[in-house]
Length: 438
Figure 1 (tube, rainbow, N blue to C red):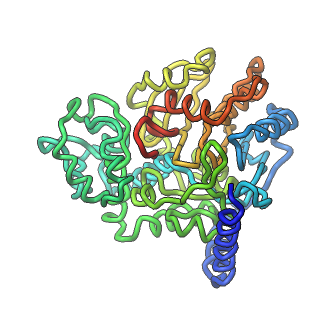
Figure 2: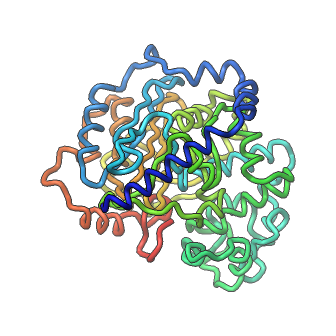
């Protein structure tokens, strides 16, 4: 990377940090005051809850992983027995800057954001403000499907990718800068690949009808509603749903390609916030996982969690995509914004995310209240094996080098990029064969 370019990027980061420092602290104080004491306790790191995971081994393997050429920065959080037991940052926020990633560094969630949108809609349904079985047309006026299918498709169909559209419909147009509200209307010009509710096909523009629904029902901007209903009561002080929210953070991670070159933080998928717009640091993502485990029933009730985590539709293509883990991985299903798996006889819930320059993952066992979250800022999917290494420890299964840190020789960056274009085709975990990336 050329030095002038690096200096410019670092200078911009410094200016963004200074702008944040100038903001008044009243909002942060109000957020802290609104967090229940029980949630504050959950935010504290607990070593006494450590039972099954070998943290020294995981830390050592992550340090070795960071030696790979494609890695720039990464943050990892682990929860055991309903408590946060590990939070650590690795590498740099910007390649060559020397600024370390910490547990406070903010990254993008990408498609892990879908689970948050589904949680919002399910909470509104619990309040009898939304009917998940009603036609999606009742709540999302801009969503138009072929042959008027928006009157047959339900809100639940939208949240579970069962609208009958082809995969990632019009994502390319979104990445070209077109308005997602206009694109949702123009979906009517396509042909259905199946009747609504009968097949599964991953979406972003159509899925973001969830943000429009939330705004129409709450009469608040999506980010305001999310902050009021989820971020603030959970205690997610770093959470935001915008490009500005990321770049105004005190410490935030720049996106990079597989060759460690910094990339632009693009606006496209912030325009579909329910599909891919959330940002946070790893601590707040761990708190989010605790809420999904049922540890904050005042925010996410058992009824809401049961609705969004339910296995509604089988996704055999997911098993094909994760074929290197088939020794452990059984059936794969999708609910409302969440995947679920049979893993060596255990029921686990999670999701992955991928945008150009960012990757994310969350995976947990709701019964054992144990799991892992991770965020990193480069176009490589190699760290994704971390989730299964952690689950193997939780279940006392034989070690497998799922992250492939023991493999040699190390792949070059072109090999990394090519392999991911072949493997990551589900739309929620990395680059696709299209010119752009989600």
